[in-house]
Amino acid sequence: MKDILFSIFSYDTRIPIKSRYAFKFYSRAFLLIAIFHAFSSIFEIVLTKSFKATSHQISLIFTISTAANLISIFALRRVSANSKLRTMFYTISLGTLSFILLSITYFYKEPYLAIGLMSIYYLVHPIFVLGNNSLLRSIYDAKNRGKLFSLTQSIGFVISILVGLSVPLLLDFYPNSYAVTFPIVGVLAFLGIYSLQKIKMPQAHSRNPVKESESILKSFFSVLNFRSPFLYFEIFFFTYGMGFLMSLPVQLTFFENDLKLNYTDFGIAWIMIPNILLAITTIGVGRLFDKTDPFRIASIFFLILAIFNFYLYQSQTLTEVFIAKAIYGIGMSGINIAWSLGPLYFTKEHESPEKYISAHIVMTGIRGLIAPQLGVWIAETYGTRQTFLTCSFFLVTASFGMAFLYWKFVKKQRNSSLHTLAK
Image (cartoon, rainbow, N blue to C red; front, side, top):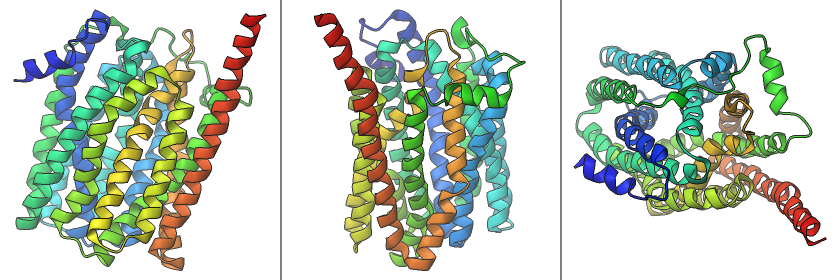
């Protein structure tokens, strides 16, 4: 069955054989790794319901998981100089340990203990992303990268739908079953990343690794300088990220305290509905990315996410929340592509992609130190719904900013080039 599935996904002979070969191996491993990552969203629900975590404890997991991205800059040189496959293997292995240790909380239900154990996964995940996204540049040709990336992402979203349907239903009947399912999923992820090590791709090492003598700050500011469009791309991605991260912990407390959702409804709203829309729209967005630029993609989908927050601000019923999360899924399909592949758009052929990817991840970590707690503070001071309205403002600002950058760095330069050719 899986051979039929992947032969369908890699049928297009217009794609270079190297990319098709890589896609076949990568996608098979990604099946098990996708289940692993889907369970991080299940943990957020478990912490909210089974552990009865406070809003500040919930915001803490988003702070840790996002601020952990700061680690990527310290891992930059090592990841750049070594095999990306080995990096991914070690980080998934540590994440597996985190999931296995969560079984301890079956006997001692302390929110901070659960957060501490899950922090192992959060802390290594940015290094996994750094290795994974760098690997994608090596194994996929630039003309088809968005298409192939979006295909594997869609597989992951379908898996998340299945997880969102089945696991919360199980938790409604057996609230402590997470202590068994998390260790099993961790072992499956380990098997998936182990199988990926068999891929025969010499390009899994960087052609232009970051020099050991180059300082961390020099690497960071060499790509984020005032002459680089990448800096301005990151500024408005930072603005979007503030709105995005402020909303997340408040959504969980809104679902639990205001709407009193059970595990099943939680799973439908938090995981299943967004991932259905992500699975449907991601492939189309991936193809669009190959034909356009990250400025336009980000601008369009930041605005859709602003609409989601505004709709959630006005939502009164569970049905309206489901509609809002469907809008969220559409918005995240474009943002996921722009976030993952955007830095590669700015990387020149002779440059190390890890510099751009690392700087991009670090900027995510900086906003993670601020945004989740700020969202909770607004909710406690002015009301839950006011947080969603504030998030909309950040997202609209980011959308218009990206539209301006498209005009400045893409359209204006393209028109200038056409004018020069006309002469």
